[in-house]
Image 1 (tube, rainbow, N blue to C red):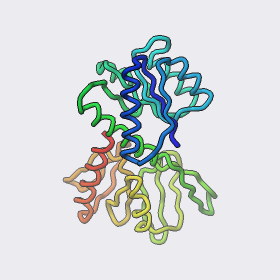
Image 2: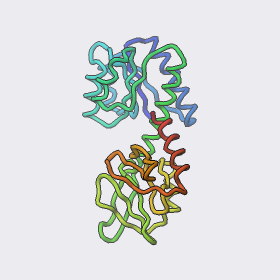
Image 3: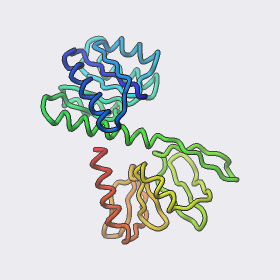
Length: 242
């Protein structure tokens, strides 16, 4: 069960936010969450040290520790997802230093509800990509690999090769068709009979050259047979992670 905290010195907003957060988690994943609410940032931090939270909705403008000070302490104590919630949208760029999952502006209209829906959707996608798989071959033995670190998977006869940000390419026996089905839940897309890519790392599509451009700067050829499907999947991915 996810442990979720809401921390804001406005008690009225805390009550409103708690109802909205509970509703959104139930709506998207039919999941009960362990939710704690705080009007004291110091108290929330002490409880986080004892039993860490997985997700924290955090106001920026607070007495005692403000949201940025608290985020700095949390990042040094335990991994968790921080979502800043504030009535000061001009602080969004300052918040990026703390690498939050996202930023929600307080409001009383449907924009707030829509943004919360988008953020919780993004949270679940991020959590799925944090899944660790174990690869094994004769040369390197057993290798744990976080899904979000995988750039792409390449087919080579009766083998597949995992290309990731942390390791040399890892070659194991496998079928890319079977992997395409399995990894679809993690936002991977087939771009070629030989390539299965992680949409997380895609920067753009070069339609003139039929190539996929990765955020890291390299490119892969894209088959014309997959062109429309890849475009649709990338568009869907960007919409749900914006």
